[in-house]
Amino acid sequence: MKKSYKIDVDCANCANKMEQAACKTPGVANAVVNFMTLKMNVEFEDGQDPKAVMQQVRANCKKVERDCEIFL
Image (spheres, one colour):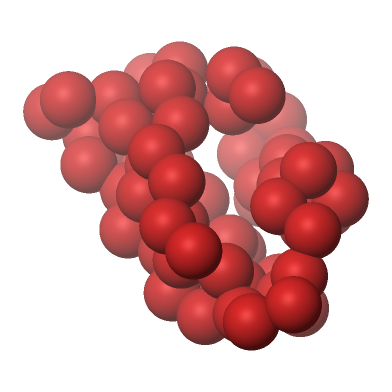
């Protein structure tokens, strides 16, 4: 399953950090952050609950970039 989320991030480097953190989150098959459109596209592994996984993605992103936001 793939879903798209609106994000708020200050710079392209920060967006890259968010993408890396999201990709390392269990339950995420792939994640792509586009700084220009302020969107994060997430592909979830089969059988995963997107809501639960995204809570962890948000927490992991906040660890590398405190000022970022993912609108769930």
